[in-house]
Length: 269
Image (cartoon, rainbow, N blue to C red; front, side, top):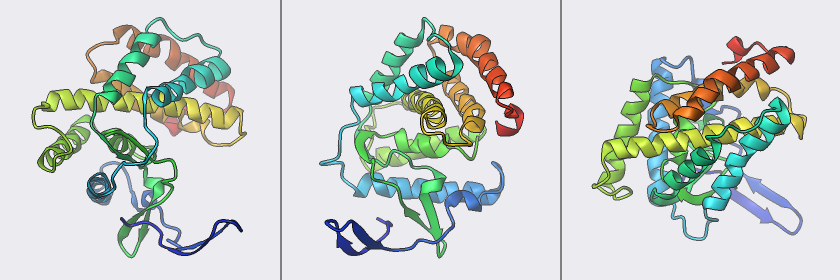
């Protein structure tokens, strides 16, 4: 796999000598969601994801199990709702939380980078390299796909995302990652559920980074991931009550809190 090569290791002293991959993360090559170069780079990143899942075995990696999935979802209710917005979780939250965990666990298990985002794909000599893979787990096949297609730098049109998801499904069936018996509609549902799980997790993480770690800039990204969450929920058949709460309670509360913090939610979305 294209990762930084190790040239010297002294763990006792705390040193590594490894490749310098330069200063060009993939997002530096983007120029708008519909730009041909942006789309072409995403195609190349999808090919790299295929290679990761078919070449890097998940044996020995920590399990992306129900406990970990649940802890990630609880970041949303604890940090985004409770600590930042002072909101109670809605009545539909426990059912949605359970459904998203079950949908993730129903997928084939592969090596999951867990942050397969443009900022962790470095471009050197017109080639993509993977970094920041220390949190890799053995988990759901669609997680890294979602990290890329619902990432922090682009929000693609539904038709564009659907075409990429279907292309990924066909390649995964052809090479044995997915069973041929899984219908395109069923796989789209799994992908949408995974996208909702990750968006909720990110909303919680960004609030925690702000409140606990005093990291700046993350609140401005919340509207972008709220939009990703709404895109994902729109593709799921159930959870009408949660969708309504999101539109009627959460979105206005988020807008008010961002305005109070002096953040332009339109510019940040």
